[in-house]
Length: 156
Image 1 (cartoon, rainbow, N blue to C red):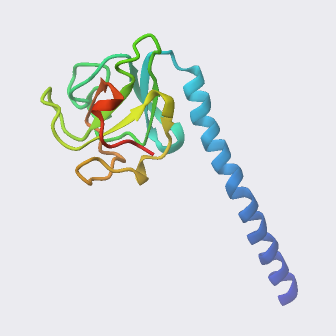
Image 2 (image 1 turned 90 degrees about the vertical axis):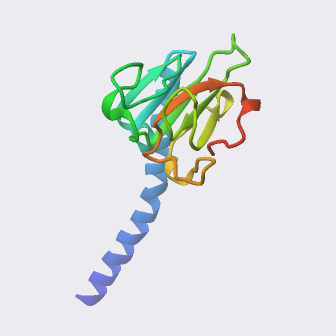
């Protein structure tokens, strides 16, 4: 009986090790699919990592306060993003980076980080930090479009 239990446990652990990369591949595929199916010229944010859960919103414009009742992101959208996408248009080659901030207001204060159009998406914000050193996951409060040269901190 002990040998059967030990053998079953070993097989279970081996299968677990094989299944984890497949889950990661499926997660990346979700962001690939989301990016491929979103309109050109937009950025998008999702509640969960790997483009899962609710889509918080998408826009081709800026929003200085994701928590107020105006703009493309509203109310409970603030401080909930765990993955973001950038499909900025190629017709405007100047403003192709999205700057995400953990502050609100048109003074664009607080820590920031950017996602370039050619980086496509950041599928897990938990391993990224704002310029202030604060973790990006569930901490984005506003965004705007900028030239990549205006950003000093980028999402991985």
